Amino acid sequence: MTGHHWGYGEDNGPSAWHKDYPIAEGNRQSPIDIVPSEAVFDARLSPISLSYNNCTSLSISNNGHSVVVEFVDTDERSVIAGGPLENMYRLKQFHFHWGSKGCCGSEHTVAGKTFVSELHLVHWNANKYKSFGEAAAAPDGLAVLGIFLEVSLSGNLDSFKICVYLYTGDEHRALHQITDALYMVRFKGSVAEFKGFNPKCLLPNSLEYWTYPGSLTTPPLYESVTWIVLKEPIYVSEKQMGKFRTLLFNGEEEEDRNRMENNYRPPQPLKGRMVRASFK
Ligand code: U7Z
Ligand code: ZN
Image 1 (tube, rainbow, N blue to C red):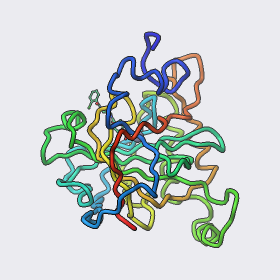
Image 2: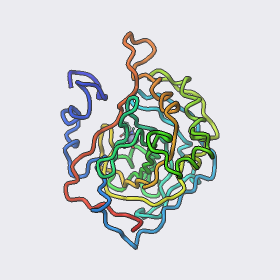
Image 3: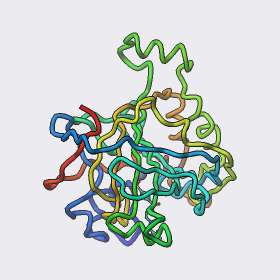
Image 4: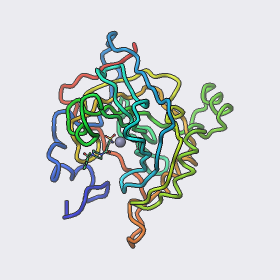
């Protein structure tokens, strides 16, 4: 990288990350292409249990790579457990990855199919580690729940999608709370108060999932993540996706306006890993 920080541009994007972060070419990197026909159904995988009981979100911010909603770090009540996890993992933050208009944007893909966006709910193993930072570097330190976003009313309107449309009026109601707050964090480094948001409302109906051992999808790319990727997407409108693209990679004082889009890493080699499915 030409003496500057990592990003998603031509010179500092995913294909250049290995120069500063050699683990980029490691054995358990994320994201991956999930091939459902090659995933192994594991009857011993219990359902994932999400206890997002308290609305403890604190803030929304633009970190120059994504938009992040942070939670009270010491809240023991917002946890994910079960599934492949041996401990409870505490919610730290969630953020999104997305593409440019009418295009790809998810990090994981399913049999090569990309989605317009992917939501990551980031949890850390507070049973075993003293801080998020310590957990982020440990092989069993993090659990990230990945949820695909799909634009409704695009292309084929099967009866299911029409039902969803009639019910939600096209837009995802809960996501509105987030997209309506984005104007406050347009520039890199901006932070705004964002209290009382419960991420439970961003979950699809089904919690069926694939799981595999992987990494952070951004530098430092630590191989510390148990990935849990939900099979069912949530449906959002193109207008809502457009609001994400009003964010900027650059700070307020910088001259060049640089739209925040295509902030995703493409799929990485599986390198012999097994993807397990909670469903047949
Ligand atoms: Cl904890 C820490 C302290 C100082 C410098 C770096 C770190 C660090 O390793 N991380 C903090 C920021 C880990 C990466 N960070 C994330 O918040 C994070 C979490 C999840 C993902 S993702 O794999 O879900 N896309 C990416 C980054
Ligand atoms: Zn992410």
